[in-house]
Length: 252
Ligand SMILES: C[S@@+](CC[C@H](N)C(=O)[O-])C[C@H]1O[C@@H](n2cnc3c(N)ncnc32)[C@H](O)[C@@H]1O
Image (cartoon, rainbow, N blue to C red; front, side, top):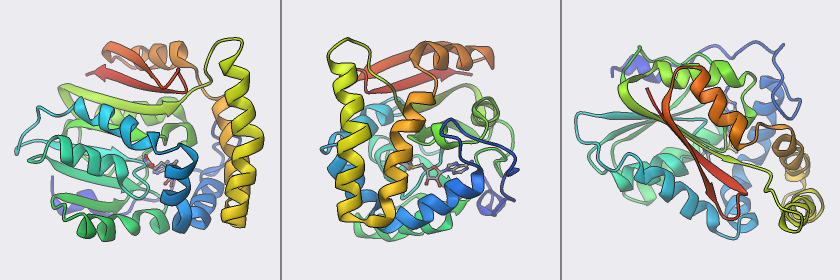
């Protein structure tokens, strides 16, 4: 993987709309606004469970070595990229996101955590600046829901992975069940935006968008089917924390 891998790409067309109804420009603007508070709110509102979800996802690539690269896309401030680096210390991790304000936190966090071998860059998941099969795996944590074209995003993730490599997607899902499902949606719709709004008023819109986009986004059966439809094999949808999150794994 050369330095070209880190060059910025032109953002995807603003005619696109993601599951929450936002265009790529609106998504970038929203994450630019919450970037400063993103990690704090993330850990608080998930009650710290987000660390565990990312660790479980990262275990999927624990066997990779020094000749392997993993592309973590929609990396935000880099937490999944760091979990991958911890699970597979020799691997090279390329962490890309199209919001410069989010990705700017990555190198500072890596330095604080004394983690080397994670390269951050600005890049759009819909047009990755990577050649076909450049990576041993690609991953995205809580990002694919925000991408303007799910199928194109999954195809890009698969394109940059070599045959036999894994595509990993970690994403929120609406839990099933008569009791827990509505209770959880109530937390997402009413409690979470208020808590987030009190801590950072600029985050209010982002945390109203969160439940809306989760409700509108593909459930586990549809996501697994979408991954199979683009040619991935051995697709698994692993429920985490009562099905509020799923880890999807597919093999190219
Ligand atoms: C909810 S954050 C997830 C960050 C991180 N992966 C995590 O686990 O916390 C979603 C991120 O996806 C990014 N994003 C959304 N659409 C994107 C796209 N088309 N290309 C690259 N990044 C994108 C946003 O900028 C944002 O940083």
